[in-house]
Image (cartoon, rainbow, N blue to C red; front, side, top):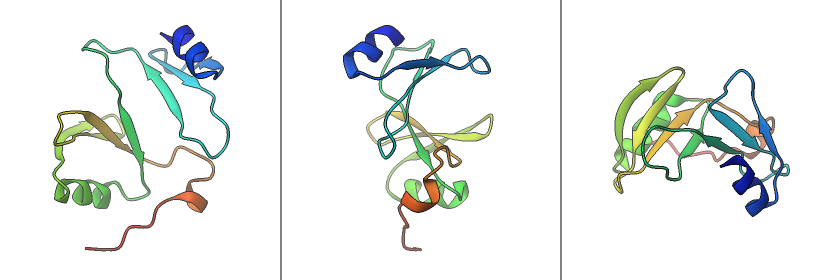
Length: 106
């Protein structure tokens, strides 16, 4: 999978010894971070949403129609109304503070 996506998208694949189920596709600064994850279920796209306030982001997304599946390690697994699973994670990118979307409080 890593070789295909690396070649298909033109990004170098970088394994992570600490997390052997993940391969990072090195994207240029300012572009979304892309990770490939080996999974036991049918493969599909999976997004992680970065935030510096996971509880507030969970509440915002639930208000939009998502549902919380539950915690996993240090992130929260969610499900979109479409059935796609995604996670709420802490800041991942070094430019998070400069480029994060600021949501208005409800």
